[in-house]
Length: 198
Figure 1 (cartoon, rainbow, N blue to C red):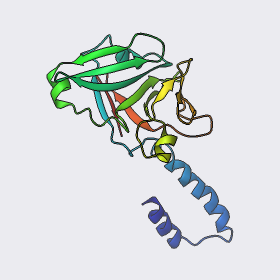
Figure 2: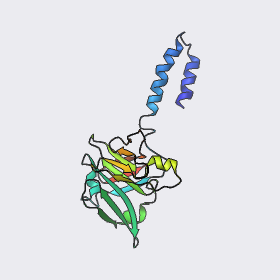
Figure 3: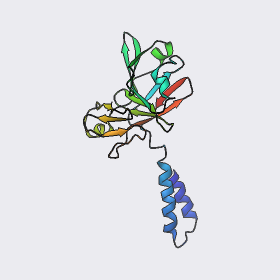
Figure 4: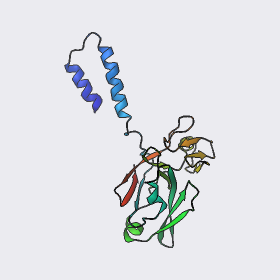
């Protein structure tokens, strides 16, 4: 749409003799504007996770959004008809098993859309930005036919490593040592709900 509008404007406006020098900075500006947050977030694997922090104020997942440098990975397991949020922190704290027993959490929220293989990494960077990534290695997802390539914590808890390709991804930037980017999802919170989605 932007390109169509730009072509229309350019066709109506006589170009100076040095029109190519004008188009280069203009096209660079357009390319840079398209790469802001529009392409940062993935839509390849459906993701729509909600967590009600007001029901679980002491949960590690609730605390992660106020603690720079703290990351967890999460997954939902259904046991005996009840959804359980499993939280695995990177900082060495004990894993957490949260029974999601309220009507909205157990019956109205759908947990099957949590990325490539149902596991997410959630955290708050030291720079004050919320992050949510797929827990599967994007390089291996692209280059194999399976969806199970889980990333594991490194010793510092600020990065993750793929056991298959051995890439290490920094969680603050989401980028590996060779420039690969983690699959990232949007994080929104209003103080009572954390939502992670495409």
